[in-house]
Image (cartoon, rainbow, N blue to C red; front, side):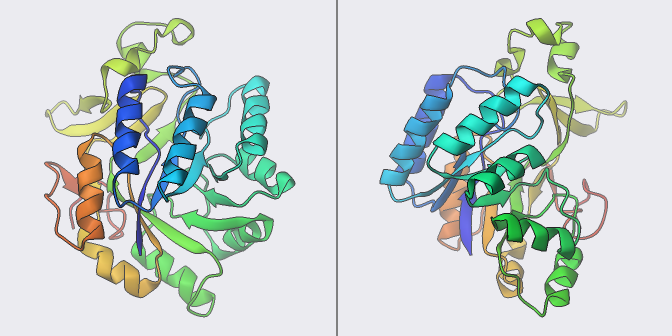
Amino acid sequence: MKISLGPLLYFWPKEKVFEFYQKVAQSSIPVVYLGEAVCTRRRQLKFKDYLELATMLKQAGKEVIISTLALLETPSEFTELKRQIETCGFEIEANDLAGVHVAKEAHIPFTCGTSINNYNLASLMKMHQWGMKRFVVPVELSKDWLSKVIVSNGGTLPFEVEVFGHGHVPLAHSARCFTARHKGIAKDNCETVCIKYPKGLLTQTQEEQPLLRLNGIQTQAAACTDLSDDIEDMKAMGITHFRISPSSMRSIELAERLIKGEAIEKPLNPCNGYWKGEAGMELA
């Protein structure tokens, strides 16, 4: 099993993003996703900057995948998506069916991200027929679901399987920006206020229990998914990749420890409910 580093979902200053990926290049992390997967208004990094980072990581021996938007809202965003996929020179992670379509037409291998609703073997096999080489399990699905899919295909799958193993899982995307709305700012003039919240904006219940993280147009779980205790079981199932979703520089250290087979420090508010077939925020 390989440890992968998912795309950075938060909005960080350009200098911090470059510093982060320079440290990733010096690490032993073998698989790196990068690119803007949340909001087109986050423009501190241009696409050429991501390509510069991708080239640097490739030269450092990493497998690099360019992640694409999970929610396209306008024709111009589709045009830009098409241009990026067709000219980037890297495999891509499609987080929307538009990305799947463009990759299929261009004969570019792709990974299906968690936001594509692949809920059965038939849809997965169709994606594989179109060029999917890797499938990231939707975060709300369980180990038992995946086991049944594998068994139903004779015990193996013709594509790689990746699990979102550590980080704050994305739960939904919206045309509205809830971070801007919280600050009383219109989305069209949002001033990319989400840059002030490098780990998202925590929301709580009336009982002051952590519930969600607002990350621009993306809503995440407040609890941090941690499936590191299940890695050996995942290997036995044939899962090929364990994803860490970066939230700080410390995410690189977490990945390094898992690569060495070492235990990691547990997050303050851990959960594993979805993987165990229970409510997502539970720790089973």
